[in-house]
Image (tube, rainbow, N blue to C red; front, top):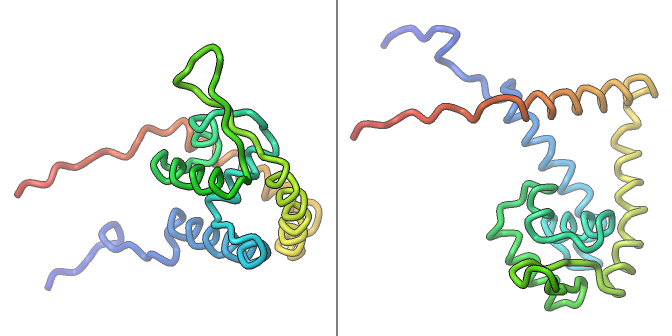
Length: 161
């Protein structure tokens, strides 16, 4: 067996994309516990509603861009929310292929109940940081996000078979 160099072994637990993904999943699940049982919403459905609470009347494409939810998953979630009367969709008068989505009256009531719970979880999560560290963390996340936007997509290697 050949000896592996430092560049051929990936220590997954220290690999930044993996760590961020695990942390994101853990936090999302923790916050979701506040609304899943009471409102029977998935994480994806709540994210859609959160976008609509902040940006009423956006299109599905705009929701997808803001949440990074794949369009087919987004479409299924939007349809479930429509069936539950938590959101409303209106076809654009200007472009019949485009629609505007907003929270329904019932959806707005659910949103108004979930937001304070979500903010409480965020506050509890950040309790381990002092004020300066919270600002620093926010700045670092913003900088990493901006940097990611400037990087090219990962190169695709061809696999010969």
